[in-house]
Length: 257
Ligand SMILES: [Mg+2]
Image (cartoon, rainbow, N blue to C red; front, side, top):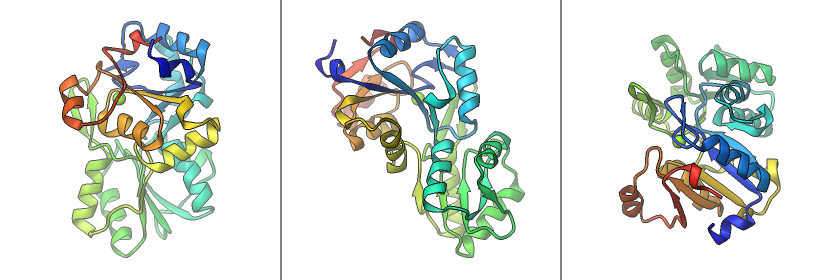
């Protein structure tokens, strides 16, 4: 076992490409999560804002993982915390699907399509041209906007789907405005949420994930131990090309501990 893994008190676990791939559990992942639990706490972490914390906990439970809702952080749930801290009681125009909208309203966020003070761009998997036009209209007239995460594409069984990073590019092209903040990995608000949740020193936290531009950069930005698994997006060649210093590289999460 890598020396630095012995000091870890919290494992941040990316989900897609790390615990499962296209809905199938990566062999040995359930047992690996159980071993990590005996040594530390675990937090399931995703940039995907098309489902809520409860939806992800249920998905993990159905796949046989021991996971509780309060152990799940999504870019959507962190966005809710961010809004409550920095934009309390502000009127929000949300570009998001039904599940994200439910999470926002359940958490007491004030939604206002007509006269918002802030636009939030989430992974709206039910996006319509009308909603997109309205969001761009508010932004064009000077309403600031934030985005839940920067991922350009979302990998699925049938190939890539355009994700929030692509929406940001479209909005920037149409309105000229970039987001005032991006919430998910590798950006600061997600790190702040981990800080509030754990209170641990950063060297006691490991980030296990399959993406260099989000998971590994997030670990490096925050001083967490980066653990790259080669079961998803990144290859060993990608890692070499990136120049990132990742001390623990595993063919899959099954190899951990
Ligand atoms: Mg992933």
